[in-house]
Image (cartoon, rainbow, N blue to C red; front, side, top):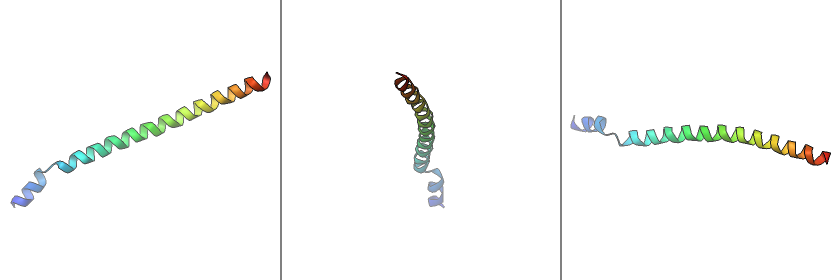
Length: 55
């Protein structure tokens, strides 16, 4: 019974789960930001290509 009680009181694994969730959320934000950034970068280079081809 004491072993079972120690198992439910032990919270070392909870910290690892919390860090994993934080990492997953940050990774999703980086991927979403990267997708937005690449779209803006492609638009900028397309505009520059149009300017140089007109010159």
